[in-house]
Image (tube, rainbow, N blue to C red; front, side):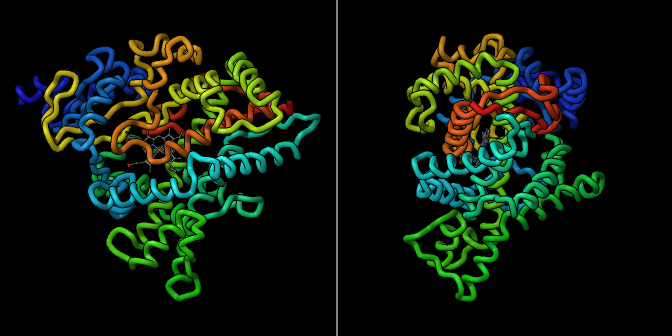
Length: 477
Ligand code: HEM
């Protein structure tokens, strides 16, 4: 054991059976958050360090070069995620986010291909995003008094992002008739996530069922209710298809559900393509696509309100490029908007949605950062710690988009979507949304704070950051 430990990247002394649990709990308590605990271990033991989660070594990587060496150069060895018992139970080993092997590969390939066919990252999707934004802005303008509307932005962005992903998945946006039900489900989801911690991801299901029954029940209820809501349309089309009332024309695929059902219509159901997989895929794409993007937008506007000079500078650039706002900002403008690109990178670096990234399991011994890590170790790039590594980002707590103008190479070291085979499946969609929403909102409105702004981390002990409440004034330009 001693030899095994001494070969691994350094870390605090671990105890038999419980590993580093006492130190982890102590530092969580004394530093006040998951991210500052990871940062403390990185400063003490280096950019790659080991913490023992009981008998399993957990290797965390907190710099871009090593993350690249491990997850891109050795990509095949790190394609598998470790088993998260509660996800496995809820998703019945289906879907893309927590599965491995053939099923994961089939689901991921199919989703990426369908997104590409639907024009994600291209003009078609750009038009959909702008149309959704137009509809939301019309609501804002309708509610304005003397050109000013005060609103809770979590609802504004939830509806914008929720409608975009829902249109892609089941061809429906949330209008005034359906928005009530959407916001209710969204609220339940927010509440369930709020108490979900990295610890819940490690506990065996029987332990949760026995000792944390309420937590377990809440998570299962949230999962079932959300699936029922988001997959309702898919289930109805499937039932009609089975009874011959619904036929999918392969030359007219409107959404992900039709693409999936077409595969079933042509080849029949198999272990990968069946109604259960479809429902779970819709749920997973809905949750992953909704929460992350909304949180980034809210966190971004919070930063812009704290730093109005950044907002002004970005707007000046956008006005110039769009001839004083006479047209919408388009994805084709990206190479020209150096400041906006830098602003979004800095927003994403600060937002760092996952406090703790998902663990991968290595099936073969690998050298990383000069250390030999045996097979069976859990390894991940801790994006939250990597983004505040002061050896890469000087004064990391500072919100400073100019850092990317001074040193362009820093842009590639901001990796909010992860790297390697399990990197974010929705990266292209999310990048388009962030660019078009930040850019076009800055062209249409000036923004002012209303009430308190957040300067500290929200939900510091959860595994991911969450959308938080932010009241803001939209002032028509
Ligand atoms: C700003 C928005 C987003 C951020 C910051 C983000 C970030 C991430 C991160 C960090 C991961 C894990 C990477 C890793 O394991 O190393 C991930 C995985 C994933 N994301 Fe995103 N994401 C965003 C938007 C989206 C969208 C819009 C979708 C889908 C429509 C999506 C779908 C997924 C899926 C399905 C996975 C799991 C992929 C797999 O395991 O193969 N994400 N995302």
